[in-house]
Each structure stands twice: as structure tokens, then as C-alpha cells.
Picture 1 (cartoon, rainbow, N blue to C red):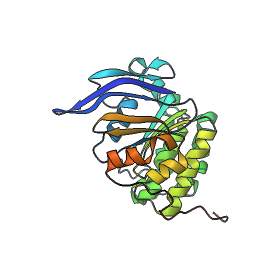
Picture 2 (picture 1 turned 90 degrees about the vertical axis):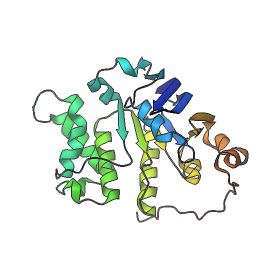
Picture 3 (picture 1 turned 60 degrees about the vertical axis):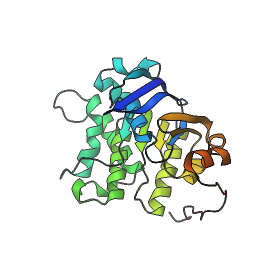
Picture 4 (picture 1 turned 90 degrees about the horizontal axis):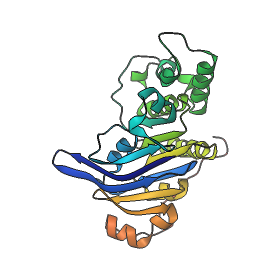
Length: 252
């Protein structure tokens, strides 16, 4: 469970987040919405403890994030970026195994519990078949799934993802959303930055809507994404049911 109060983040001379409150349930999926420049990715980074705060606090399971040692934080929270700076020739299984660093000591080999976590994460994200492929030779979608596998290998209950379906084709995007729903049902607290309001309505339980660094609304997704707020924040009219719809076929 993540709870943030009065978050203020300044980058350069600009206040990117201004007195932002945010919270998740102990299990379920919460999305962060807003137009470009609203502060969505900045909020996610602040929740992950990856940005300095001008003001405010972030608590993880009732404990201040600032007081947790890196290894302890990594056991409780995993962050999956939209774009990664990792351009490694390491094999996929090695990249996923890096998610276990907080559970191992010294330079010892992974123990049985580590192997189970790594294999389970790769199977669940459908990257076990890629285990001997080099990470830097994967497609964007494959890299995204490997990074999610690395996050799952941590066994952290709080998982933060920044636009995980960006640049994915329809099938992989649907499969990823379905996996995130499974994780939420299994007791994980999922926080995901999304651009698509249709995906937010279909796949998430709660939403926080940002505009220019402030919270416009927060609550159940269907209450947050309404005609008036979409018009005010995005400057467009919400026409429900107007978009093409897709679902996974029975053979996938």
C-alpha cells in the first residue's frame, strides 16, 4: 500500500507537482491519468523514491519510504520504466535474475527460492522462451515484458509501471493488461501511468487525474473519468462506446 501526502517536486525552475496526495489500496490497480505535461511520470518516480521531494512524504505499507534501506525498498516496491537505459548484451534470464539482488548476499549463486522466483516471473510474462536471447536484440515489446519479469522476480507487492503498453501492438497490450489484472487479483498493488482513457476504464479500479501538476480528481476510475472532467482537462468530448474494441481470442 502506497500513500503520499502533499508531494511537491521542482525540476529546474518549474514546480512539476504541487501538493499532490495519492494512495492505493492494498490490492488492486490504480492508474495515473492526465494530458502531456501533467506530471504523471514525475509522480510515479516520486512514489518510487527516485526523485528528490521539495516537500511531502511517501509511505510504503505504513513506513516512510525515506527511512527504508535500498534492499528493503526493493523487496517491497518494483518500478518498470517506459523506456530503459539498459542496452545490455546479457541474456534475458540474467536480466530477470537481477530482480533478486535484494534477496541475495555477496556473490553467491541464486538459491532455490531465487530460482523459483526467476522461473515463475519468466513463465508468467511469457519470456521463458527468450531466456538465452540477448536483451539488446529484443523488440520493444519483448524488452518491456522482460523488465516486467524482472520486477515480478523481486516478489514486491507494489509494482509501478510507466505506460507499459506504449508502442506495443494490440495483442501484446491486451495480454499485458490481462496480466496486470491477474496480479492485482493475486494481491499486488499495481500503479500504472496510462494515456488511454478507454484502457483505464476497462482495466483499472481506481484513478488519479492530474493536470498541470495538481490532482483534479481521485477515486473509482468510472467516477474520475466523466464527461465534464474530460472536457475540462483534455479539451475534448467523451463519447463512450465510440472507439473500436478488442479482446483476446480463445486461442491466445
